[in-house]
Length: 134
Image (cartoon, rainbow, N blue to C red; front, side, top):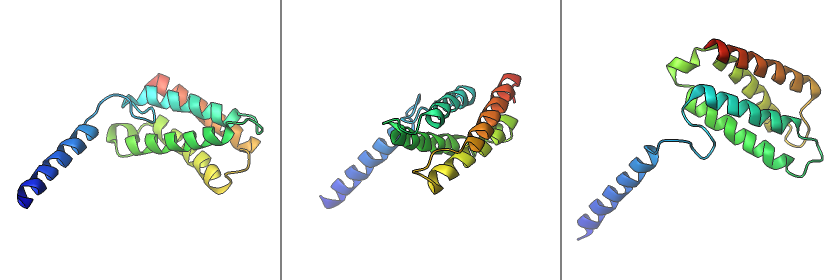
């Protein structure tokens, strides 16, 4: 009887994990699998988070959401050979690494103006590269 329940439990667990892992569409962090759309959506989200005023009540939540989206984006596309060699991806990773490092090192400080300008420049480069198809 114990062996039966162990086997049944294992089967249910495999099915549950399989269905969860195979669910298509958008994940909880907004990553859909369409690299171009995901990149543009992430850029807009990050622009909003970076440009929020320091006294905004939802600034901490926006920063936390940005960190989650950065992690979801990076984990989805960093091992994708078709994407990881694109100019837009390498530039995007540079921007994401800079912003994530700031949020990790200085969570209570605003994003410096110099970093904001650099991020905006890199975001524009990514948008241009995506329009070119690279």
